[in-house]
Image (cartoon, rainbow, N blue to C red; front, top):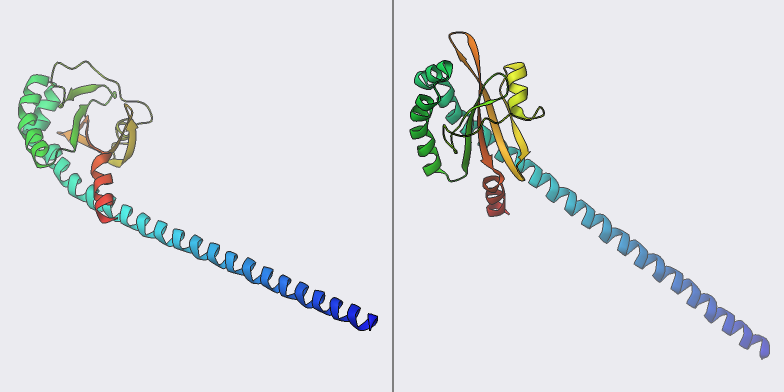
Amino acid sequence: MEFEKKLKTKTILAVATVLLILCSVYFYLGIQNQRQYRDWQIQKDNEIVSLEIKNLIYNTNSLYREKIKFFVNNPEIRKEFATTNVDELYRKALPLYSILKSENPFHFIINFYGPDNLSVLLLDIGPNASVETAPPSSFVAKVNATSEPASGFEYLNSQLYYKIVEPVFYDGIYLGCIEFGLRENEVAEIIAKKF
């Protein structure tokens, strides 16, 4: 009887241990599965957001590149930029800048820079603005070094901008570049509306 009692107790303990191990394995696998699903969901959402951002940047880039091309190809603006008559350049460019600013308040900066990375005209400040030097790592410096257009995000004065910088030529002579910048608010608002 004593033997049967011990055997029964050992059997119950063995079955309880096996059940405990099976339950632990089941819960562990369930937790792992949930983590993998959550990681997959995050990865999928990241890919969707990344694709949306790429699409948004492409659309923004093509939309605003056309507008800056208008500045670059405007013969009156190029002529005044070539003569370095800042007051006349400001007078010719301000109406176009005002139209863009009224269409979209995020058109924050349109600046003209010479090939030496020094500002010729900062449209948002006016012709009497102090001369600013573009940082060596900026898109302005890159465009002035290569004479090729550049665009992307740039951090300046504690704000993030999406910038498009186009080289300007007049009668085959490189004059400098036009910097067209949008505050990050536009990109953030569009993303926020979609998500």
